[in-house]
Length: 217
Image 1 (tube, helix red, strand yellow):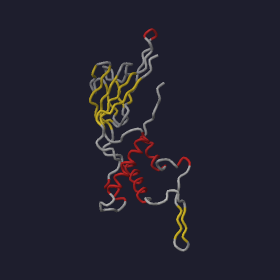
Image 2 (cartoon, one colour; image 1 turned 60 degrees about the vertical axis):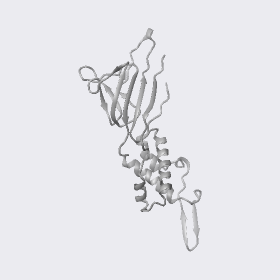
Image 3 (cartoon, one colour; image 1 turned 180 degrees about the vertical axis):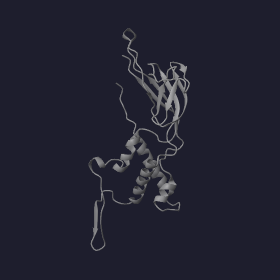
């Protein structure tokens, strides 16, 4: 049996993959000067990369080519397969520039329809009704991503950066500090499942954008 195949190629990478702007982070910190700009930009880049590794995708708009080879049985015992609908690797879709099915270029709104929000292409018959995509080689070149970055995502990344900035120079293992007659401080230290790269309040939001990784059958 021929296994189903898939290849994802980034044709034109996003120009800027940061998930929050320096201006927004400085606003959270009530900073107007430039003394900490380099440090904050580094924190923003690192937090943005960690978040995008967690969700297995880039948030910003980029041009992508997805190639599909749906599963087919050998000719001697052929059982026609199909895909319904065709799920692209990134969403939301901004534009679709080319769809090729078995060497034939398809026409939008004649041969297929676009579900932009979910990143899906729906194959349609001559009468305009949906049908399954045939088990042929299919390639889709398109642009997808968010512009602007969703505010729930940018807000949480800003919070990560602010927390890191405010914690600089502090012993990360310190759980409490007591200076009699002066102050007593006890800081939350994540443990167990909370002791990951990002706090739960961030991952709870990112889960809404996570792309599942599925192994080949």
